[in-house]
Length: 407
Image (tube, rainbow, N blue to C red):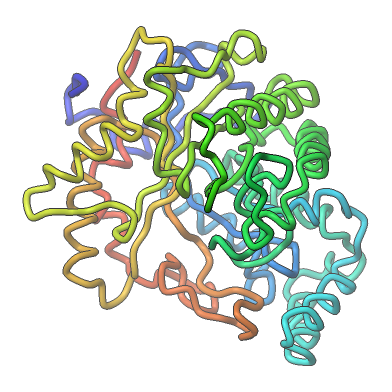
């Protein structure tokens, strides 16, 4: 599909670029490049921070620096760090108050408030920190370990994502309003939140990009106007980020839970008019349940190519870097269907040498579905964040860690 250069190129440790000090990246054709026009391949892990407590997960288990060090030692060069608009627009909320509010809203009660004290024992700065300054502490620690950060607006109302009834799926001011899917997705607040986080990011040299929104999803009569609302609001969001931080990459996903960007083939986004001729990165998601996988991978390969992979074809109006910003599978007791999905995905991603971010780092959540210390079966870390849930994971990705293509 796209030419693959020598697969025996350098291992990850020998091609890891030192881009976190004053890093300003840009896009050119299908590549992400540094200021010397050398390729920077994103090999990331997702670190969730968009749920009810409104700080990055896991601080009750390990000091921030311990987790940042683990990420670097595991071979990742970036983190997709998720946040909510709730947090972005209430940046001075004390972490203690955020825990208390989450304890009430989730029904977790005293178990969650007790977790705050445990988190403070591991990370003493939390005793006086705000939610957003906690993000700053995490970003700084990641930068100290050579890790880039892309801030991802995961939702508006802080909660577990994603469904078509969580109120975070589609812009409330778009056509076909549906309360179940859009009641929290206030467009003006979203734009203000993007601008606030882009402004915040300027203080951290290792924040290299911001994404507009995680897993946009329409229901009913939403998005029935040839994606006119998508083009309209994506343009507004991109302008908001770029106006606040012109150095940052702007990451744009499609529709149907970020699995479909096929419509850009016939109607590319006008990047030049948005000031993003060299700043835009496409993102898409793929899980075993979101893409059909057959025994020979052919249907899966065709589906990925038609829905997003074609964006890597060079010298087209739609060409751009394509970042698989979410994929993953149960790290223990992986099902046969998931195993086949992994085989097909690794083959596809390795063949195109595309950028990626695995879901997820976190071995557990402060609270999810009312359960404190809720286990994450997709987590690379065990429940208490002390080490690999499945140490074979890096080998499972094979050459996805390597750089096999360059401009």
